[in-house]
Image (tube, rainbow, N blue to C red; front, side, top):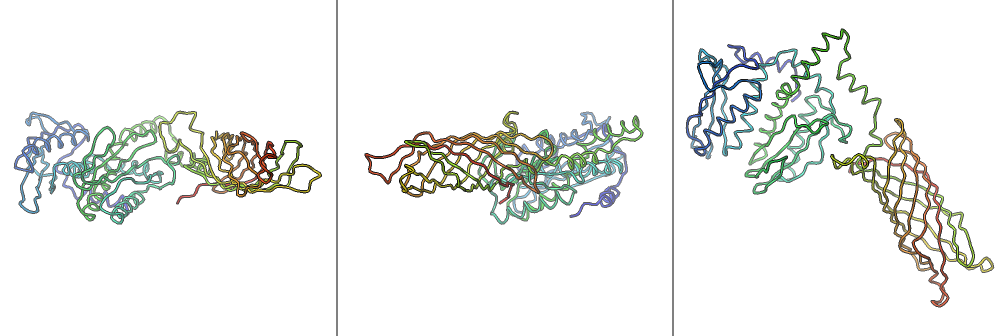
Length: 474
């Protein structure tokens, strides 16, 4: 469904405009009549009607003699598939019907979603005008949206994938540009499935999954919820229908959200004859300050090292022609935890697999030497410096586990390490040079000698390498 402003206008003009509805209009809502799922349905739905009207800026009053408009609602037991019907009409002072809508439901909580959708779809066309739609669509079109990994479980993996795919296509159709990282986005859309019989904490409320439930919300950079909805369904086709209808009401709701923003922009235009359009400024700023290459949830790297080693025991010897390589992965907690303290916003934790060799000579006169291959598994803490627009420097500290492949030499299990990376943007990732120093937490030995003659020595390790790292989504 590709959104079209002309279609929006066409839909708007199909609604009979017998009376002008505007923010502040007085509406009288009598108690809903009829019989529904339970006796409490009448008061519950009446309260929902008043709440939705108030959210759109209409005044809900208790005296019908002062009302500009009226909403009359009726509940009907259809006696079919255990479903109930809620039917309401919106009239003016002359009892002319301006709008009418029917909602079929199984449980009262389903009415909340569908009622909000129908009221939003109707009032957005009545209260708003062409200039408002144009301004709001300018705010939305081209905005960057991040949809994180969706949690929970619905009917099946296949059915869940259909609903998620529908959500993504609808948001792209409305003009949003999806990004891979939250820090790049203007808006954030967390979603989750809630299975029947389970309880999920959403915000400050506990939601009980009576049927299958799909929750989503649209939030801005300040984590302010602009729109949220719970979709209740028993079959995938039903979920698709409800989700599509709720997303069609999203644009109408955003008109109300951006109402004050648009009014402020119009006021600024009166004072400044040539204002800079807001949406253009945002795009240019994003283009100039593209930090996606260094603002990642995780990064994978490959580094080649020259790794000279010095051994000190009875004598001091050096193994200068020593080379190795490392596979690394880094995780950035600030991209997973929104309220993390400022110091940790530029921190990362890393690990990986590193492969190097040992070549020990006991005494220069003895041609016998002892060799080994060592697997090193690091655990490091990293602080990231981001000077300028293309640089990414990192100071690292941590430990590494030493696992020998053979028994010729016996290094200690742990070593400490300090290092620094000097990085620069290269394509989608970072090219860097790295310097590092490491020392064992204990002495090494030669297992090839008899136990009584076991030679102990210390290892001092220097690393100088070049590498490349970037994010991969899989």
